[in-house]
Image (cartoon, rainbow over all chains, first blue to last red; front, side):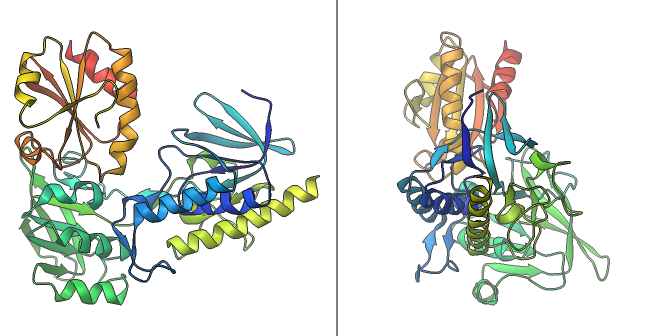
Length: 309
Length: 109
């Protein structure tokens, strides 16, 4: 444990955390950013990002995140990677941030811990993880050259990653629980034009089957109740996300799904603790909306620290 | 991935090195394009230090060596496979913790 009190501790090195760091560091606030793995967040596992302004031809997720990290470092943010925050709690007027081995203290904390791909909790999902079940096209897509695969979920993530996957595989069956797709229209159009894709809307994935590796999935038509078995070697799951908010459970107010509640200034229910990005309770979760949250959180934190002084 | 104490293995030398090793071998199947593989890498480097003289640690780039990935049914990376007496023994998938790797090693004995 050290006795230094930082101005701001930022939890998470994705788009929100790094953007908050740019702003607080430019305010000359002593900023410490703690990231449990490597900086980059979810976009680092995204192939091509086409809807982030300023890159007319799109930009690789990893490249964008490296640039944002470089920008934060340029203004003096102290970034520590491989440092997982376990708990955040108030300590008088300060806030304690606990990792496995250390305890840090700050006047203000910005939580940008993000979210993690949601598990479907269906038979075969756990058993075949890494044996045909994947949550990362960027990582595992190239290992499915010329194979038939399924992508679960027709939101932006599913279709965007599905498009990257098309370069490798023989065919993709997209399976969507809702009767319609929620992904951007342009993505829907491009993927529907491909001869290698097939769409099963209003279908529920009921099981993932195989021997030592996945060899099929079972889907149920939600309207007729009819079941169908589809031969695939791989299943890529993009069925939404779960918040990484455990570190604040019982400390600040969460919504019924576990996302952290905040007002328009990104203030949580506890003074000095701010939230930004995917872990915040809200409707839209995009890179630029995460950056917008982070900008607001950083400026709110700055004003809060000023008033303390 | 290969690093100071993690030996690079390829399709041409894999069989010899793994079969002839007197120590059990832990092989990391990874690729440059895979962010979780980079998270696992420093943990493996620590493992080599903790288990020096007890375990040989190698890395196979699945992008460069697709036949090795196919041979061992690697369809998700990072994948770690322990080999004992030249035979695949235990498989772990994902950027797991050092503790999980150590536990798997201890079960191997």
